[in-house]
Image 1 (cartoon, rainbow, N blue to C red):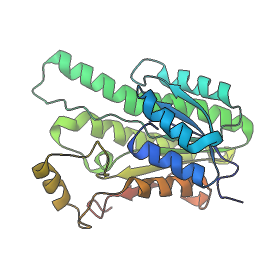
Image 2: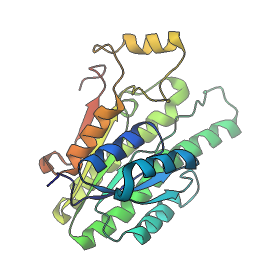
Image 3: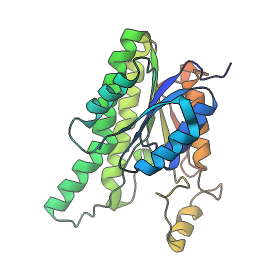
Image 4: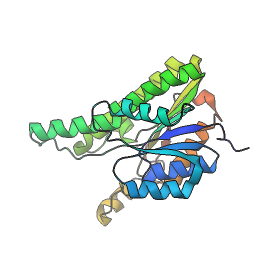
Amino acid sequence: MKPLDKITALITGSSRGMGTAIARKCVEHGARVILHYGQNHAAIKRLQDELGPAVLGTLSVDLSCPGAGHELWRKASDISADINALVNNAGTAISIPFSADDAQWQDGWIKTMAVNLQSPAELCQGAVNSFTKAGGGRIVNIASRAGQRGDHMDFAAYAASKGALIALTQTIAKGAARQNIFAYSIAPGWVDTDMAPSDPQVRAAAMDEIPLGRFADPQEIAALVAFLLSDGCRSSSGATFDVNGASYLR
């Protein structure tokens, strides 16, 4: 028997990077998954073919649209009534300078908050209500080191959204524990995906602040998600797990 044999998980942002790694690791450990993606149908189709019948379905929903989280949860629930795990991995990081004009500032903040906070919150709402009826469930929200220590000024919206996501996770953990619902945050620093800096100078500067001397591997995030979904340590519900190579220590 595998540790996630009884898990059916909705994973957002599954078509690349950490989301793909998380989906692979969950299936490797026995889970069934529903894969959300934005627009890259070719990538999600390749992943679905690779993972086989463990993929119950794929869903394309633009999380920047109003009500997208609610829409995604309804569609996922139509695919399977047995969802007992949610992984909010999808996110966006938009550069919004403080010198931006009002329209650029508002557009950037609205989209960032929609993708990084509003839609995950709506998904959490759907999950909590469903899990309460079913007798329990698990939520893992992928936050960021930026949500704890701040970020570059141009990414203030990103940092604010991830800090709020951590607070949301803690609130659910406290409020829904007696309903057998467990919620965790993972706060990565730089992870070696296509969202990491590619410019050699920028990459070197980012690496210099990491005592471990390297970016995290997506497989490290995936392994931690799989462990948390396994209920291996329920008493850590509400905790934020730092994966940043000792670049930010609390």
